[in-house]
Length: 239
Image (spheres, rainbow, N blue to C red):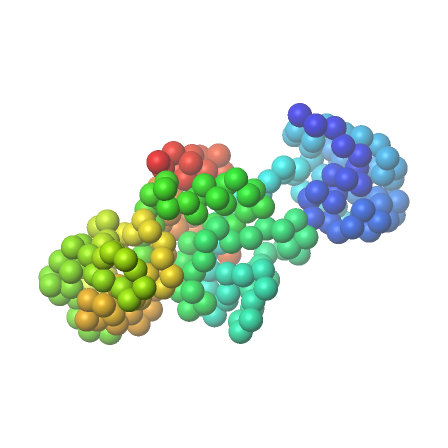
């Protein structure tokens, strides 16, 4: 547990600069555990702390762990160049507290994206050493054949890779629909593997990370949610 002054607590939660947070407190816009507090110098234990800011409930979180159902034409970057960044889909407070994507999805790829401000979590989930499986559903330009699946499972050679890259699992879902499971997370990997195997990716969606399944989360495209302890366990339990 830690004890902090109220202005520092608000700043840690992404409500702006210390000066701005102090003004919010002085203006009576902040309640702690249901009681309005106007003195920014008061200290509070952060564990279990319930804030109400501008009438909206904001439970204190040391770190945030978020799942987003990413739509197409959003960049997984804090400094996007050609399309809006995924942070524009989240409350402004997350930008202030430097939430960032865990890995990247191409701007035209949709589906499950994790985001956090916990550097250790981001590193652990992104590290190839942990072999976190990621499941993608690809719509292909040409029909999915047994030969295609065999090639993807055996491994295909990409131009800038020293060795062939293989899918962990691969199965046909429809005439032009393929589910593919990867662990490496290389740049444009699904698209490049399909091209190297003689097909082409028309659209791509990530449906699962570790044991976390987008279909079970009830998120429409563009929607997000905090990860529960049970959902976090589906990620951290993957070795």
